[in-house]
Image 1 (cartoon, one colour):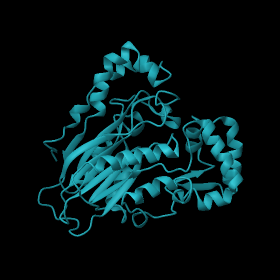
Image 2: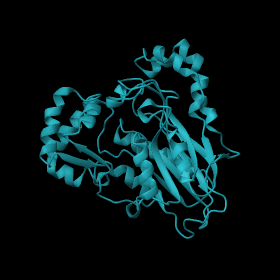
Image 3: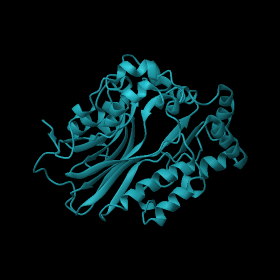
Image 4: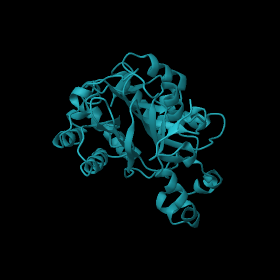
Length: 357
């Protein structure tokens, strides 16, 4: 099938770049301020900003296809975790009863040209297979293969782009993005990146009537107050647009933790130990709205947004198992080794497995 490029969008060619030759020098910087004052970054900054402000829009939905629904909007929000397990993701979207044949997919963490995900353009390949229209916006230009186990994958990145997407059975209009401030310096630590998280917004021409869709990814390595700030920025922007029914979804990273640094996360861990490991595992990690992230959810409700009836409240979406080599390897990238006996002890108090978000 040949993609039909929207008049207000671009083909994937818009994301072509030759920045990789600068990556070795960029990796020498230890902070974004240090990098931004360099002659090198001043030279490449226009190209970096061009990529981060670009949106790919292609239409794979078949003309004249039967509508999926005419009076409701079946929608799914899903963090695809890079798209690493591509065949499994595609199979789930095609066959799982809770995921297949939706009108709208609000998707986060999709790679384009990253070795860890087979150098696929994950958004494009999924949309083509599902016969859906899609929009994709980059959030990072990755200077490395990734963090944790990703850093050891074979091959090299080709495009080195990571982003978020929106899939729709119906036409998307007025597609645009809203940049969100970083909660942590992305040039500090073991996974260095250029960019920032974003919200992707589009008006959907649905048989039940036009509505607005927002795919958003909030920061994990930041404070709870910063996540609230990020969602406030999105809502403030939506208030400037013509009024439409609006659905917002994605990965909000409501972990209950302030993970702006390892020190803050460690202090937060001991606070939860003092509250009772079993109490936190049962009443707080899968219920961020009750206490730790309450301000964010209260703000949503104060702005007229409902969330309780659109989510499986109390069901975790992020799972940690003490036996997971992958999870522990990734965690070691930003938590000191001496912390792990305490982490294992707490997890084993609740059966070795904890779910949150």
